[in-house]
Amino acid sequence: MNWLRPLAAGAYRVPFWAQHRAPSCPLRAFAAHPENQVAEGVVKVQQPKAQLGTDEGKKNFILKTPKGTRDYSPKQTAIREKVFNTIISCFKRHGAEVIDTPVFELKETLMGKYGEDSKLIYDLKDQGGELLSLRYDLTVPFARYLAMNKITNIKRYHIAKVYRRDNPAMTRGRYREFYQCDFDIAGHFDPMIPDAECLKIVHEILSMLQLGDFLIKVNDRRILNGVFAVCGIPDSLFHSTCSTVDKLNKATWEDVKNEMVGEKGLSPETADRIGEYVRMPAGGLGLIEQLLQDPKLSQNKLAREGLGDMKLLFEYLTLFGIADKISFNLSLARGLDYYTGVIYEAVLLQPQNAHREEPVNMGSVAGGGRYDGLVGMFDPKGRKVPCVGVSIGIERIFSIMEQEVEASKEKIRTTETQVLVATPQKNFLDVRLKLISELWDSGIKAEMLYKKNPKLLNQLQYCEDNGIPLVAIVGEQELKDEVVKLRVVATREEVDVRRENLIEEIKRRTCHP
Image (tube, rainbow, N blue to C red; front, side, top):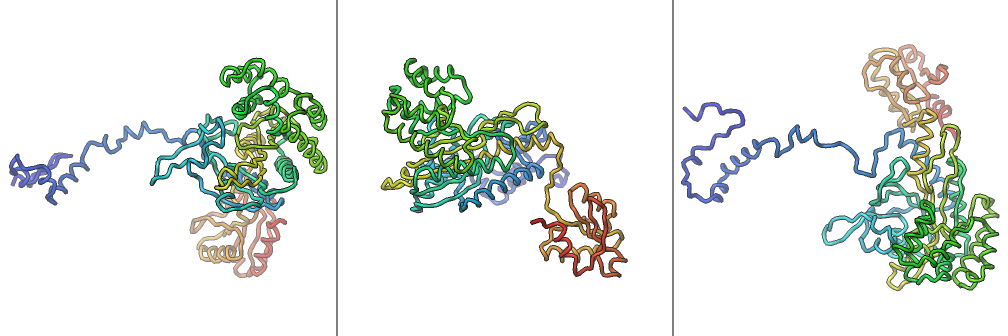
């Protein structure tokens, strides 16, 4: 019978009832028949591979992370966790609570808060009628959180990822997805006391991380606005001019002036007047007194307020013992629109040690300031909650530390395992399983090799490779004597420990205060 003959590879035999159906039969009638649906499915499955993903297509697929992002290996993550722990310990030492917020916000929550940087916000596709965007920083979500929950007093820290559609510079720690570590104080307090504590926190963290010499630049938006006013700039151009001045740390004065004139519409004379102020040498109390005596600036109310608070800030910083690391710098602007008072930025000045032959310019490693009006933008009645905070640039710090570790060839432990359970003999899997279970149940971080009869040399080598400090060895003699041989990997010292004393001995040797 013909219908029993085998088909050629990839061919499909049309059922007899389909071959003899009248040509005029409607297509939907054919598809409606259950057997026809099965037939159509077979045809789809046997379509050319090119439509379903061929080997050729796989060759064209580049396996990579998206632009401006990266993976972190266990070693890299261990370095980053060390930095996180240092920062968190500092935040907690200053009495901060921790919060968390969604990774995306309503688009209207974020828009209009970042000045020219608003173009860097990632917008998401409409999902269920809401226009959403990935968070650009942690400050605006914090202000929304305060307004939504009617909180008027809190000291909080928040460590989470943020997203910016920026041109990444991976080697300098600049990404499109990155962590921010924020500390903020919200509430009505006496002037400059919370601000001084934020600067003390920056000083503590950078000192603990031992990144090398650093400087914390400070300025005040009220002083800048006063400078703009006495130079003849209309209020409507304050924010955009501020964003341009903020580029002085990366561009020459000529480039900044050209942008002021060519893009912002200022006259060359006005730009030059601004330059006379923002190009003044950085200083401290001496520069503050000089500006208080300036015939024009001293007549501006905002500038006088800012200079008065700056003088008070330096008094507190002197009491904290960190004034020598603080520089009053009129060129510091920080381009975000929501700043209203003191602003600051920390930069590294030199390499840490001889491992780096040339300085690594990583840009700022911390920044922040006062934003007294941001919460009021979300409150229906416009009620303000004064806030001041700082953000630690964890990715740039991590890039520096990673380079340092690579240059020094320092070995980084990627686990916290305290002891490896091992045996020198065969058929001891049940003994190892019982012992390691006792260790786990007692809170000991322990491992064993996933083999029934591993060689002792391989077990000891595993400890060497992974930095495990102790080996708990159990064999026939140990079982008979009711002891466990505890081996110190670094010195190869071995000592017999009574089984009932093993937990205490491991903790004594590995748990450091």
